[in-house]
Structures are given as structure tokens and as C-alpha cells.
Image 1 (tube, rainbow, N blue to C red):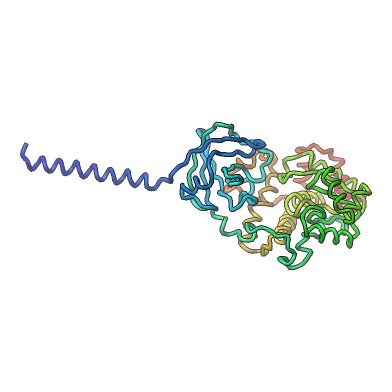
Image 2 (image 1 turned 135 degrees about the vertical axis):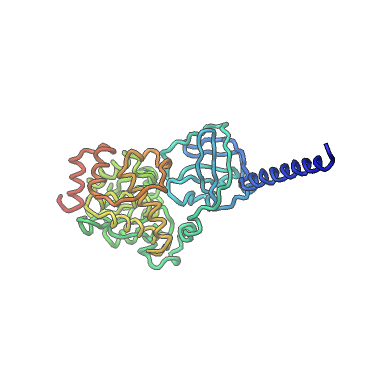
Length: 382
């Protein structure tokens, strides 16, 4: 073979190799680096601890507010690298990753009844999937609330207290608020409101009998403590995922029927557990869907100084109350809300009285006659 054709063949082969190398390089350049981690502890079934720390995640180029893809051999899910340990996920029922004790913890927000399919020794693969689209749109919510009354426009917002209303609900019957016992300055203000309103009974959603007794002993002069000593307080430590615990919703129904006179209902800050129990109450009294969503969001506006109608307001409205209300209407999804493809769900307004009645009777298992008695009490029938 002549020397010139040999040179041409060599040049062609070299060019192919170079182009191929560049193409392969571009493929790998676009791929996010990955990190392997082992599960070293399972906490309560719904939270797992990994053998890596925040510095390892930062080695991926990950920052607070990024979405992290977590893969197993059988599954893959997005988890938010949480802005802080308290606000573990922006969309409710979303996955979160946080650094609580020098090790990375992984779980699902407000899914305390969900058991993760992980066991000690499982190996997970983590990679950065970009920044969560909602993190930068929720400044007030992610900054959290304070116990300083000077940070709020008025004491009504600070105590998150107001009359429960909507539909045909009787006036001056129920009031919702923050706790009169266990949230610092808020409790002192709330307790004074209870005294001024002449509250006669209390439904406590955030403490059991033993803990309430301890607070009543530590705060003997509190108006709420006096009601406790008179056996006018019903109490149970309820979960945030209120729709998933039939015994707890049963406690609410029984407490409503047993309560005498003007009644206060509260959890810690009067927004999550109180919000969804009041949603059920309002729905049974005939409140419209929009009324219930607006009332729920009022508590968030009060607590976090969120402006009604803002982008932040609309995001939280869609990702929190509307998702939970959707589960009341689709009880087949309640056990695993973390598996719902929320991005493709269309939220349709429904008749709250019809949906909550069906939920209580068919899902919770409460006798239909008892539900009707609660409706009558709420609307002035008894």
C-alpha cells in the first residue's frame, strides 16, 4: 500500500476516535455525580438515617433547597434537601432530607403513619436533580414563626384565635386558637382570650391527659388550668396526618358531643391539626369548599405573616389544604399519600358535608346516627 493512503486511513481512524471520545465525554459531563449511602438506622418506620453527612451531599454540588434523587434497585423518588429540620418538605407528603445529628435523615413530611421500605444495610444511590421550584417562593413560611408578639400586627393573629364559622354553624359555639399551655408567650395571650370569651370547655389536640395535668399544675392560675380541674377538658395527642387516624377523629366527634357551652379547640399553634379538625366541623355544618380552604389559610397567614392572595399563599393553598381535602374525598389513597402523583392531580371542589359524612361513616366507622347528632349540635338542633 502506498504511504499516502496509509496516512489517510490513520487520520480517519484518529478523527473517529477523537470524535467518539468527545461524544462520550459530553454524555458523562451532563450526568450528575452520584453518592452511595447505607441505611444505618430505621426510626419509627417512617424515617431512616444514612451513613453520610451534609458535607458528602455538598460534594455532589447539592445545596439547601435542591431536590435529591434517591434510588434503590426497585424504585426512585425525589427528596428535598430541607431548608431546616423544622420545615422538612415544601409540598406536604413530599420527601425530605435533613441533617439533624451529623448524619443525613430521610423521610416523608406529614406521613407519620407511612412505613418506608428500607431496612438497615440497604444501599441507596443519591444524585442532585436541580433546585426545588418552590423553595424560593415561600420566604415567610420557611422563615417560620416567632414567639415574640411584637412580630405580629395584633394579638388575635399572634394567638391565632377566632370563632369557628361557615355554613350553618351556630355562632358563639366554637373558637379555635393556639395552645393556652405549651407555646410560650402565645399561651399566655391565648389563655387571656379564653378568660375574656368565657370559654366553658376545651378540646386539646396536642397533649395527652398526663401532659395536660403537668401543665395545669405548673400554671395553676391559668384560666385553662381551672377548666381542667373542673373536668372540662378533653385531650388527646393527635397526629398531624389527622385523616389517617380513625381513633383520633373519633375522639373529636365524642368530644364535640360531650362539650358543654362555649368551647375552645386547639393544638400547638392552631393551624395544622386544629385546621383540619375544624375543616371537618365546618363541612359537617354545611360550609362550602372555598370557605374551608380560606379558613385554613387564615391560620397560616396569622402564624407566618403570609399575605393573602400572594404567590406564597397560592402555593401553600394548593400543596397543603387542597391535598388533604383531596384525600378525604379519595380515602383509597390515605394510607400512602406519598405515592400519589400530586403534579398530575386536578383538585375539584366538592360538597364538604357529603364527603366528610361519607368519610366518617365508611372510613372511620362512626355510626351514621352519631354523625347526625354532631351536625345537629353544630347547627343548633340540639
